[in-house]
Image (cartoon, rainbow, N blue to C red):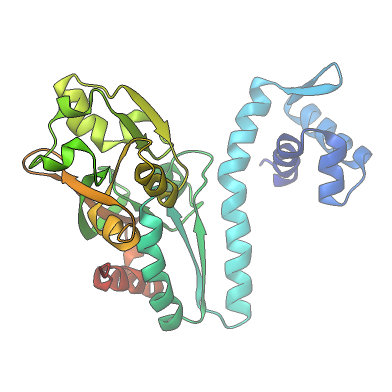
Amino acid sequence: MIDFQPLVILREVARTGSVTAAAERMNVSQSAVSHAITKFEERHGTKVWMKDGRNLRFTQAGNYLLGLAERILPQLDHAERVLADFADGRRGALRAGMECHPCQKWLMGVTGPYLRRWPDVDFEICTAFRFDGVAALLGHEIDLLITPDPIDQPDLLFTPVFDYELVLVLHENHPLTTNAWADPHDLIAETLITVPVSLERLDIYGRFLVPANCRPHHRITAETTELMLQLTAAERGISVLPEWLLREEGDKLPLKSLRIGPHGLHKSIHLGVRKDEERIDYIAGFLDIAREQQPIY
C-alpha cells in the first residue's frame, strides 16, 4: 500500500517550488524530505522527480502521483475535520463549490438562513478546483456544487432550485434599446463584456451567437458582475447577466435590459450532490432553503 506521506511531500513541493520550502512548510528537515522520497523511489523502482539545473522536474510517475495527491489528500483533510467535529459534538461540515459568477450573489441570500438554521454545521465555499466542479464533487473535494450547467452523471444528482432569464445589459442611450429583442446579427459590431470563462461555457455564444454563425467585434472580460455593470454604464461595451441581478445591482445605473432572442435565454441554478447524500440532514436542509430563496427586487 502506498504511504500518504510521499503524496503530501509531492503536493507541497509542487505548491512551493522546492524541497527546502516544502520542508519548511511541513516543519521537517530537508534531509528528512529527501530521505522519504528516496526510500519511496527505491521501494517502487521509479523516480518521482529529476533535477533540472536548480529546479526539480516531475517525472511521469511523479505527475501521476501528484494528481493522486490532489484528489485524495483533500478527502483525508476533510475526514480529519469531520471527525474533529464529531468529537466536539458538532454535526458535520458542508463544503459548497461554485462555478457560476452570478450565482455568488444568489448564494449570499441562502447562506444567512442556512447558518442560522444549522448552527452546528461548518460551512465552506470553494470557487477554485484543480479540475472542474463536477470532478471536484466526484473526487470528494466538495460536498455540493452550485452550477447553471448540470450534466447527466450516474453518480450525481442535480436539483434545479431557481429559474432566471439572461438578458443583454445596455447603456440607456444604446441604439438597441429601441428593439423588442436582440438578434444575433445585432451583436456583430459590439464589444461584449463577459465573465472570464471559456467561450463554450457562455450561453450567449453556445445558444445564441454560434448557431447563427455570428461573433461580436470584440470580447473583454471582467472578474465581477459589479465591474461588468460599471463598464457597461461607462459605454465600454454591452454585457449579459441574469435579469434579477441587473435589477438588484444596476437599478441606480443608466442601464436597460434587452431580451436575447424573441423567446429569451432561460437558465436555472442547480445544486449537485453525490447520489444518496441528498438524504443527509444538513445537505437536505441546504436544498430546502435554496428552493425557498428567491431574489427580491
